[in-house]
Image (cartoon, rainbow, N blue to C red; front, side):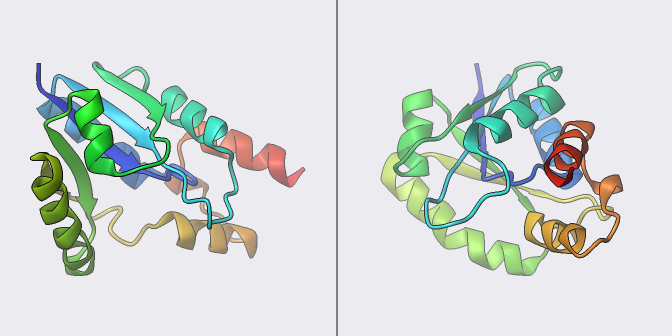
Length: 158
């Protein structure tokens, strides 16, 4: 069984993330969406909410599950989960330059490989940070979010 990990904070999950997760599911038997938390960041959604959003959105895809990553190195998490690959979406060469040193270090630490998937051009301009900023200033960004996110954003703003 070929298992991969799609890591991220997913705050919030957007359609660019969903597209990468779905494509990963077509390449691997099992995909673990590892929801990470950087404790120095301020999140709109709790870790529990982010896991629930991912499960609600991609839980119907064959072999896809979502769990909190917890603290520690991604390479160690992958080893604990029995994953042979990390799947990362790339929007541009800027993402590539950022990801290459981490991919090399992860391979050095535990042998886990990183598979890069180029984002669909419909989503290359998206980032959770940009979407949160535009939404907080009154912009309509609903077309970029799955229903599970829209539902929770509307509850938070009421």
